Length: 145
Image 1 (cartoon, rainbow, N blue to C red):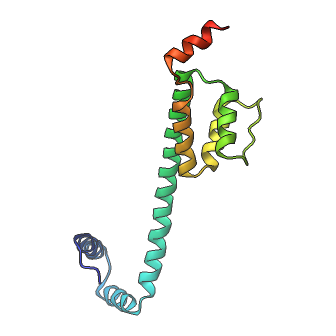
Image 2 (cartoon, one colour; image 1 turned 45 degrees about the vertical axis):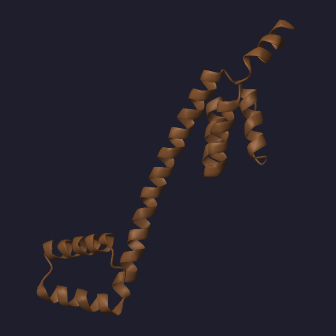
Image 3 (cartoon, rainbow, N blue to C red; image 1 turned 30 degrees about the horizontal axis):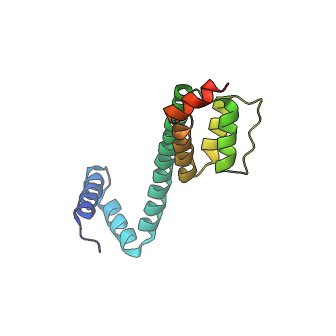
């Protein structure tokens, strides 16, 4: 058995919840019997995994929302065009082919919902790097126009 501080806290919390419940002495004996056989612990583990998955999904959606907000902010700040975004998205994931008629937000949403965390980070990094250029070279290119 794992004997670390987290294990002890969890064990005490479960025990306290059982003791605070309205279970009768017979129910407590039945619970102890089920715990010894292992069936109840398997079902409890399943329920905890399901609940944990819900919290992870919520966290992932919140993270994707934060990334969408960040990507939109960078695009506005860098004054990047929708075409630049489409090219960046295609360079990161060639399977995604955003339509030019789609809005910038919908292109970002489509990409961020299907992208891996690494691809999402690459998008943000690429957007941050786009539009940044050497002032000297920028001056030269603007004078030739």
